[in-house]
Length: 376
Length: 206
Image 1 (spheres, rainbow over the protein chains, first blue to last red):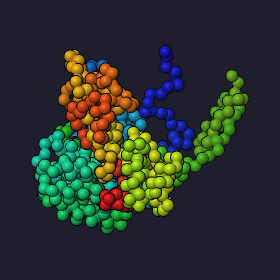
Image 2: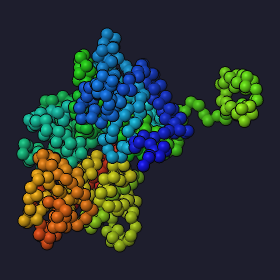
Image 3: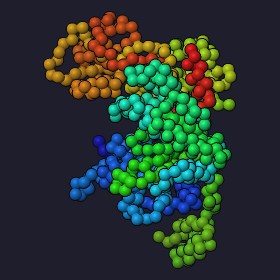
Image 4: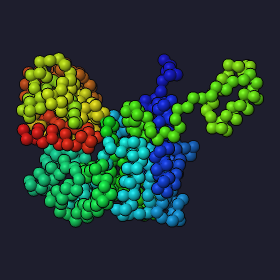
């Protein structure tokens, strides 16, 4: 039996009309914010060596890429992320450039399947930026400030939460318990799932009853500054403490800028430990059932390409944002071009027809050529 | 005011879930059990309960249509849904087990046929020990499969073990313990933090 021509592979779709222009408007709004903070646009290859993504994202994430072979037999992939390509460029192509490097992008990424079952798309557009060569609370704050400005530009000012964590809090605890990488990953999953019941049971063999209880309660904590104090009562190892101090100084900046309403500290966000090395954050907006963006510090990534240097960045999920704004039916107030009536251009003489059309276009008018009077 | 939508698994866990919620003062179980409506709201308007099949609870919560859900751990292990599970509710205690005929006939070709409603759990369990299996997915009366020779063993949920015994089966090993869990959508957990915290605290106290 033959497949009908109408059939589209799962996880892929067309976009048109209002939705397509909304998507473009969101992309332009975000890119203009990046530009305003002196970020330079970069486009990475759509297809690249699979090994690039294995190095860049870690083997388990890269597994989700569409793969095929090059003419010489080498394994290629449709890019499942943009950051890997940028990290390689930072270490090689831009090795001699002055730091910090500020780069931004808006590009489709391709994944065989998503993290969550609710994520049905296999092609989605990431809009993001990377700040390379700086390791300080100020650099972390720069990307957070850009994220908040971008959300504001999309008129989402009041309805979002950005959750903050430092993965070293978790790493310190796992290290102090002397876990191997398997137990560490089990611990990570339980913490990430806020699964305090199973966590308590998991820890009984290696910690005192009180420690278990305290630590398993900790994963359910999220909040403002007080979360850090509560954590310090339970966590005593130096590595975690240093991370808590870093979060505290970042939180200090956030508070002094009067934006702490939109931020929360969430010490249990440990979804990608092999990738991030310090700050991590996730962006949630009212009305979206999943996060609409995420980011963090990845100081080891660029070293994978031969030049060790710190970096921090984030990305917004265009599909989630567009879906949200469409469902709110608000459109986008930043849309630069209001809906304009097209001028109907018709003439049975082709030269005159196009002379008029081009003239009107020069004036900035919208035209629609009406072919009904053009001789066939 | 924030309203929380809570998906409740119908069937095995439903009565206990509703009792738990009633004890916590969150809903009137009589109304929920007597009416055939699939969605009810509590008096204060703080909670909306929807009643769906157990396997659909993670689906509603993962998509954020329901903020929270009450469902067995067995369902969570099977679905592999990306959810938060901040609370074990201590209801619906049971075990996921491998069971076979008391006189288990060896089939002699090293390949195990496993009948189950939990194909992922079964595949993971036997995969972890390198045992090749043929997983046969059934939607009910799994105990019949070994009796009639469809499978060598089953992976199923056991509460008292009575159905197993009545059909001449015995437990070979326990894969996992399961109790009812409170699950929460990742975004709701952050965006409706206050309401979720209140719910967790009330249920935790019981």
